[in-house]
Picture (spheres, rainbow, N blue to C red):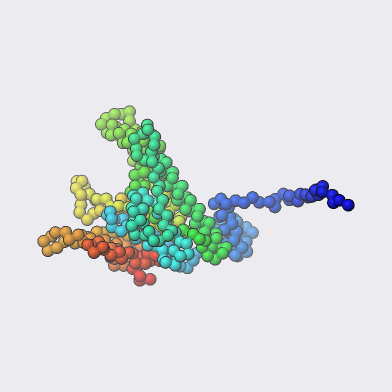
Length: 364
């Protein structure tokens, strides 16, 4: 007999879906936080019936998350150009950490990070140089950069880094180790540029003084000349710039709280007396005046140019670093040599203890 070639019909029996048991996959930051809180809650003490569950999770997290070797690094670095401000924080990983996937995210407002990495760190993987600037292609405006878009992009980058850290903390809580790659250091390179961006966006968007930065500056100049129709920036409105500026500092503070070594870099600006004359040696950091109060450490860099007996420059330049504030230690380390530039090619000494988050000069 011939075999029946009619294909068999396979009856598919659909499994009943029980309402409330099917949970879609969620990779959002809120979901990461919830999963981390659940892991911590499972290790925590029994729940208290009359306590707020959210506060209980917060207390459980506070008990479980703190590594005894945790270093709170939110360090401000200020100094003249080409004095090792960017190069120091780029040494903030040990060889073992680099091997295990530690990365540095460098927000590069001045392009100092890009050139430094290309020249001195090309052999070290995991340094992510991020360009926060958004170029302005609008033919109706004259600014080279789109300041409002640059502000938004910068905040989005920092929030994205914070989300990465939330994920890696949850991963560490579950697996006892960091994922590959993981974020160890964030370098915010150009607080003076950031302050300028926030001020320009305040004038364009908050006070509506012009369609771009140049237009707003012209409006203010015309107001100074007596044009009553133009708006001015009152002392109360400057708080708008402060709020915008602090948005980035607050995000860096949270990164520090979660164990990421964070650095805020700026140049110096001259100091003046009451008559408007520049005072030698009175330079101060060119960041917002509220910045230092939120930092854990502050380091100033200096340049010294060598001269011969005739007072002529020899071409030898030495850069030094000075820890002027350190909330995490009362030890006051000596001034340290960062590099020496000379005709033989120079020597890079770096910052002692920076990979370990130690600003005591190795005293701890």
